[in-house]
Image (cartoon, rainbow, N blue to C red; front, side, top):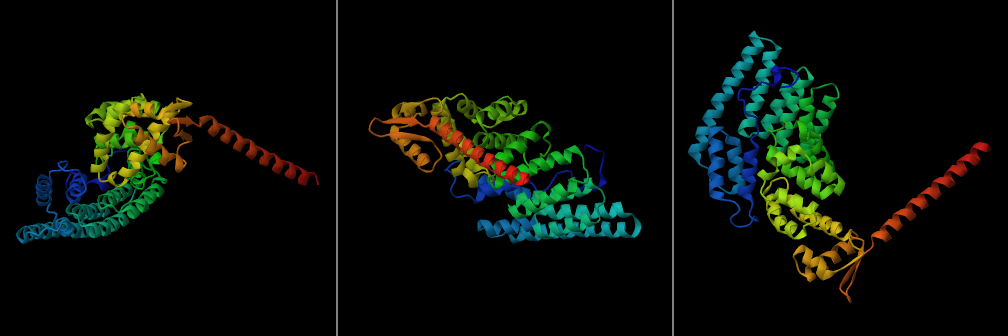
Length: 396
């Protein structure tokens, strides 16, 4: 780790917790509106239970049984309870020994390891309390940041948006005191995740792209998913020039993007104005969005914004075009394009008109530019008037 070994970051188990693949599996298991055949729920259930048994996750198992409507296996619960109690006793004994015979560093490590234990078994409340106790015994920005980042991961794991926002602000305040580049970069990714969840996608895309060359936050999100998030957020929120320089030619994205089926084709077809191909790959990419536990809540927004961006890009090349010609370009019917454009025009998202008599779309790009120019002139006149009044007041 950059900045040297920080004992406060040491844990009993080298694996980082919570296990985010488990949260994704839980999401898939509990979803009832995913397309048939997309998820093998029985296989997912088996995988989850294997993790629960391996990590002795009694609190998580109990909450999952409640959420999924399962009848809890009392024998399994008894086994997990015994394992949890025995392990907790060992942590308590180590902390007591450190308090009586060792120093503050060992006490802090014991408290942090106890917090990691509660984190591992999925006990949110006890983990948060234990991290708080460990934080109070921690000296140094590095150790405190590791503590806060762990709490942020718990917030993401349990979909607690308020907690994640609060802890990210807390981490920023801590980093103002110092901190190494790796933790700064991790926090940038974590903040991007928070912004993505609350649909501030332009800000999230900017942070993701900034952190891309030095991405190390694999404990929170895999590189494959990170690239998927970056591309999707960039396509919906950045302009064409930014997409070209920051996404199309990004070496880190190019090295991973093909691991996500259809994503590269989706990106290329959009940028190169191959709208039939774009619409075809759009279906598959939408399935990725619908299946992801962070993005699924925004699937309708994603679909609407991508269609809007594609229509804007297409219409920017024409003063006028027939409905049928546009429909042919997108591989859809003229009635579909008519309905889509009417919706975007009525909501003020597109500046064009549809001539229903001649079945022609007339672009109002020039009118839009004139409107912006007129607004600038108006604002300029107001500024000059204020300057004149200020000058008159000073002369008096």
